[in-house]
Image 1 (spheres, rainbow, N blue to C red):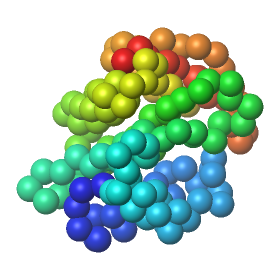
Image 2: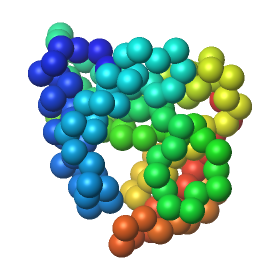
Image 3: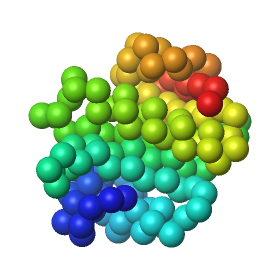
Length: 148
């Protein structure tokens, strides 16, 4: 993940807070380890950060397995997509997703997956296809795919 240590700490803190209900055992250290692994990786994981004038706007990851129980999809998965509330509706989320899809293609993957609780319509507008509904924690999520 691009950015200095304070950006990484901020992003990790947001991730823990954002997905605490689905992944209660994830810690700030877990996310920091993911970011460090991405720094040295020629393949997966990939972590991107959207920045403007050294200010963190959002992040997204491309990982081998997004820990959806019982998922038969082979991956890779777009995960941990987050855009700061103040930066939303500016195309940042779409740009992050597009860059992650392109990175998956450049790594030789023909298809990429994700799951979402509330973003199905938004992802459809970005060219994603709904595959199925799955259960995560205490709620349903929609598993989606996109050709690279």
